[in-house]
Amino acid sequence: MTEIKMPSAGQTTDEATIASVNVKVGDTVKRGDVLVEAETDKAVLPVESFAAGDVLAVLVSEGDKVNAGSVLVVVGKKGEKYQSEAPAPAAPAPAAAPSAPAPAAQAAAPANVGTEIKMPSAGQTTDEATIVSVNVKVGDTVKRGDVLVEAETDKAVLPVESFAAGVVFDVLVAEGDKVNAGSVLAVVGKAADAASYRRGGAAAAPAAPAENAPAPAVIEEQDEYLPIIKGSAPAHAAAPASAAPASGKRHPVYPAMPNAKMMARQRGIDLADVVASNGQFIKRMDVENYVPAALEEPAAAAAEQAEAEYEVLPMTNIRKIIGRRMKESLSEIPCWQCTMVIKMDACMALRDTYKNKKGIKLSYNDIMAKAIAVASRRFPLVNARYENDEVRVYKHTNVGLAVALDGALVVPVVKDIDAKGLEQIALDYKAQIAKARDGKLAPADMGCGSITISNLGMYDVEQFIAIDNPPESCILAVGAIKVKPEWDGEKFVPVHAMTVTGSFDHRIIDGAYGAQFLQELKTLMEDPSLMLC
Image: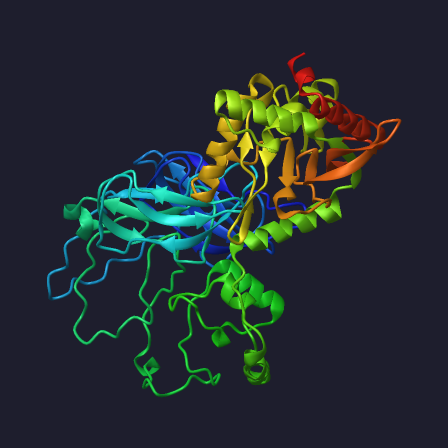
């Protein structure tokens, strides 16, 4: 038999509270099943089973305080007997048999039915996503490939497709919910099995309720996703719909998620005063958005007075994450800038040659990406990322291109540019930009670059500074091509020039090194034939 113990919750946390117990003695579990959830001062920790078998003992209950190393559950082989350290008390004498025949023993719970549709991984740099749309409801018929849910990350909107055909048994998320990779979003199964499905695992049919039994205070949901309120309401608990609770709030008292309880304790908020936005249970977001009654009326009056003076635009998750990441970049990365002016007449002639002789439309971004790859042969630190307190220099050059969308910014990446010609680079960027505008970029299309090009030249911007996109080594801010005079030794002649400003991560690239890289980039773009060498 195997003892499942409370893991360490961190150096600063010596105690946890059992928030939920998801198994009982006799249940069959497999490796990875969440047996218990424990709440610390920082998070809710799922305690998984690292053994398969039957639950022989459950040594904790909801609300118990436990320390790291405390035995929570014991798992073993079917038929094994668990003997605790304390001797078991003598069994009580059996009660006299009732006059009515005893009910038959409850049948064992059948295995769960249906296929769980989970949140896929959104990439190494993305730790969470926000549900932006739920396209199905319970009872809908779906086929393989149907988009059930759309989730927004810091880089794109990901459609989550069903990989099973059948009927939707359950939808476990709502718009606005935060989810991580592996979170169950929906359950799909055969129509014939719908009646057998129970969230979190099928259960045996409940016994018929006794006549005149009081109604439960809330519906008990036996699962790991919703809080569980056990027991029945006393007969006097029911109140007319028009009556307000003692707190003065005209809403019921909702159950709360463990992280919502934790935040409420930290802020001194009475959960009886908090309204569940989903009408079922209080989430952390509900506590974050709670405004005491004393502040509601003045705030509402001020808002009403100012309503005609401005329009409120909703802050999308992508905008929030862009802001957070850029703030982190400015505050955490020792970044420095350097500017170089590049004559573009040779690049313009090269574009014309490709267009007139091969029918291929090159962009200046395509040419610059190739020049970056060639220049990084001499200056390999440009082709690097700062990750996990180490500098990782890559063998192949992956260059990102900032693409502005409606209300968002994404950076699709073209990989292995060092091994590609200009024609292939142009085709690859065109395909990536099309995917970005159609909202079809996959995580693998982003977040893998070492350097980014941000070009505002099409808006007649001559020069600007871009914020580095961590963990990349640098970002190049590219301005518009302008006609400028140049002294040739005898007279001023007109030349086409473009300003490029590099923002470099000083942890990777020093001033002289970055300046030399830009100088090499200038040389290559002013004479593109050198890229063939």
